[in-house]
Image (cartoon, rainbow, N blue to C red):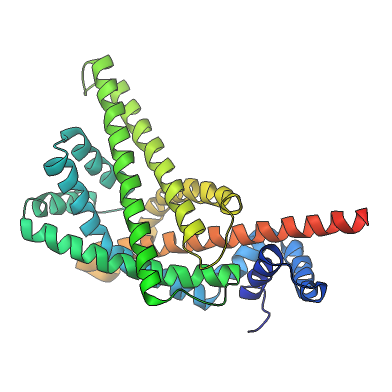
Amino acid sequence: MTSDPGWGNSASAATVVESTSPASRRLPFQALLIESARGGYLGALAKYLMRTEVHTFAFSVAANVILSFFPFVVLLLTITRQILHSAPMYYVVLQLLRSYLPAGQDVVVHSVIALTPHRGVKIFSLAMLLFSSTGVFVPLEVALNHVWGFAKNRKYLANQAISLVLAFACGTLALISVALTAQNQEKLLSWLGSRDRFLFHVGAFLAMKLSAIVASILIFFLVYWLLPNGKVRARSVLPAAVLTGVIWDLLKYAYIVALPWLDFQQVYGPFALSVTLMFWAFLSGMLLLAGAQLSALRVQRLASSQNIITHRAV
């Protein structure tokens, strides 16, 4: 394996933090630390995101996210309306769709509403979700293993198991977020007496945003913590998960502002919506991988500081 500033930099972090290797193995790590310190976090992240492997991983994740997105939404609508029989939760799911899709909100909402009542669609959605969720987490595991320097990936069955666990955890967090948002909106309605009041719209939006951002942060955290095939400390990835979750929400608004300049409609015609969603999923994948790399860089800096303090004490 080459000692470039991308994968090699992160691999050294895992060597120092997770093992008690002899001092001779720390020399390349210290040299790379000096190099990354000169460029800072932004420079190191920019180098990482410019690597072709990172783009490949992000596009693979994006394709499978698009495949799993609609089945996931159909199942959420089915659970909220036909299993939990909760109209407020059902409408919160639709609100979240309108809030988090960068374009084509009306088209997507009308499509999933029309698909939800059909029993065959529900069965197909569940099968597609199980299939595509593994497609999301397989390339992510490989990418995160590279970030932390773990040489071996999980075997097929182990990867399928962790993928299903993470898919179930993400779905549960999304459902909890929807339930909390619906509960808060119902409380606002009881206090204000009408959904048409301005204060209700503001309060409902803030409640939805807060629950959604917290759920996003927890999903990023679980992916960063559980998916790599090696020991990663929770406190090492939590700050990056918080930052990534907040930036992801803000990035959506920046993407919406940039859409007129991208002009996908002019280039792709009737496929513009699909390309818009695919590119948004790609940007989200790049952001997720950047957050993982940031965690590794923070571990490196911490290890370097501890080594300096130890040498001074000696």
